[in-house]
Length: 299
Image (cartoon, rainbow, N blue to C red):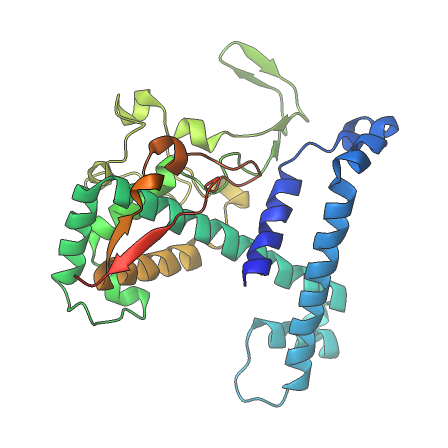
């Protein structure tokens, strides 16, 4: 698992990096010296082997009674259902998308949210009161429906998404017509990148405390993260909005509820400084530069 996380981290660093050869082909040797080519080959082989293993495991157990997504994709490959042709390589890339899109970003959101809760013990206490008031510490939440009515839990996660969107720069858009924006003429065909990180920390929208972690701002707010409010777009908007919103939120809500319900958490005082806790790693996603290290207790 640790090696898998390291490889995911390498992919995000590669995608978010600056390959000189993409812009100046004659200087491709610089990428070689920087080790980008070797790192890309290593990651490609690691995930290629992993995808082969996943597919083979499903082929070896094709007689099982229940089917998951990989089984369904393999059935399309064998039967060419509904005129849809899916090749083995397509299946591997789809699985890879699920691995990358559903692991690194969700893990990053959980880690940042726990970081903010530990930095703000009054918020942690308020969240624990809400969750523990609904059950006992020994209870384990297993479904999204069990935490559906926990308003402060949702507010905490929304605030974590606001301050620490997993993808601060959204998927690029291509203008389909000429646009004039705040005195700038932007031509049709221009590639535009939206900075969600900056939008969600804008003091005009969020107030002078926009840099502060304050979940209460979401309790009575009509703003939603499903792309209809452009002041708050952690998952993007429009046709290229993240397709995994429902899955991500259900997973994070249930996981965070269990972590906060069953344990009290403390951080080693050596790692409690903001310059350590809030340092961000390079890459297309923004995760912590240093892993969050906390200690649970049942007291």
